[in-house]
Image 1: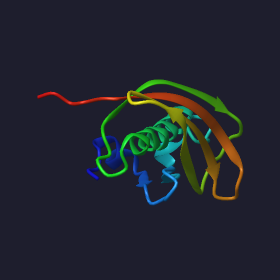
Image 2: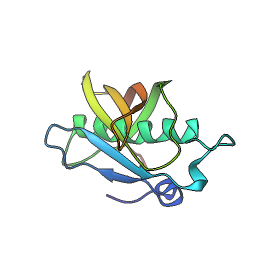
Image 3: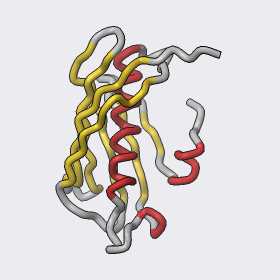
Image 4: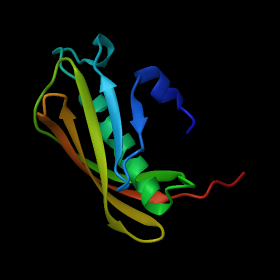
Length: 129
């Protein structure tokens, strides 16, 4: 899968190896990911959840083709703060049809602490040139 400019800038890694169609997004937290209170920035948290959930939605539609999806909505709830280490966002398809996928996500610290949750709706998109 092609790396995005955002992925290169932020430094997260995507894992699509789960046989159940879950998608994971890993990030080793660095100084550039922290807010002014020296905790992982909420925007970075939302982005990791969006990436994991979007990739899970794409796999829901077609694991081989991995079609483009657009985020229609992503509701994020922040549970706890983290300052360092590795975090992993997991996206799990919850259902959908031929055009929309519903996905739930969680972001955990490497020690198992729940950092945030998300619920998203993603639309399959066919690119036109």
